[in-house]
Image (spheres, rainbow, N blue to C red):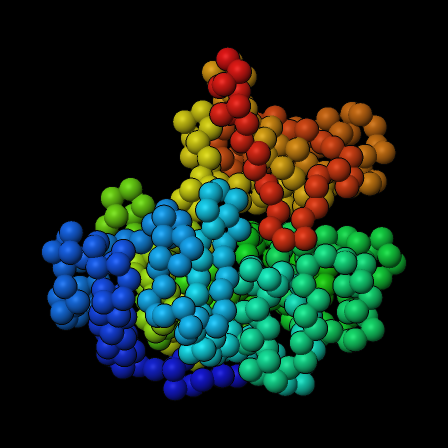
Length: 437
């Protein structure tokens, strides 16, 4: 099932020619209309005409979130304000938010790439899609909405929250496609069970999820609870929103919409471009963006690119699922680790719920890692001896996964805070501990 066969099944040479043509145009546009890029290019002695082949992209400077924050609010816009018809921002939890401006053409592109992606996992004009992603300044809700409407599906724009109402709507309206973050999906299933609703008997045929890290085990848990296949969606506010890459029915990597976004993988420490198949930091360049064109934006997302043949027939490159972020990596006792590694260990356990928090402290100048894990209601009522054995088992699983010992605390069911958006998995208290010493 192809949405845009000409674009999605293009030959590699045709696609490279299109990418180069669009890259040259966007570099010229950024240089002539965005003071930030003009200064960066001039400082490096680069002119738009220096881009003669795709590999020349490596001559261009990287763009970071800090660069976008310094340009807050509208310093990265490449068109007059009157041509910007929509604005979205990042959360701004770590400083000033990044601002993304969209022209009418940008919204058409966003609608196109999301329509392609939603088609990949079966959405048609006969479907009813329930969109639990947040609307407002967050890009998630709108991206799914625009793509689904482009296809002609019936959209339920319920947004986040109202969890019991979400379940009622799913039943009453006959929702066939459901969109959520992985953590919220698990919470939905948990509440449905409390309400006596059998999620396996709903009308769902597929699920789209994204906006946070996940493991293979978490996907399996979601699919088991909802009795429907779950497909990954990737995007970020700075580049467009959801729709940069999505999974097809093969569920083996996300197809990057390469005619609109040029992907690279780099070594985060050396900045060198890495070959196909090697894991590193994803860098993206917008090839047609009018409102806020971005050159070599460092996403901090850790993944790899592959160009092997896909069973779905698309020739678009695939990216592996995100397994961590360059800025989310924790260093504990000198060991680099990602929260997803701990989650992978926990999801091997039947006796605990898939809700946890990682708490890092440094009480006496030495790092300590505590993992708080919810037990199942049945287990929490068991003997202390049984709980001790389970805790030891979890500690061993995590040790095997990350190579260091951690302290596991089993907590009562439903005591880990639930999130209707992105789950807060890590609480790093080390900076506060240092101040107290």
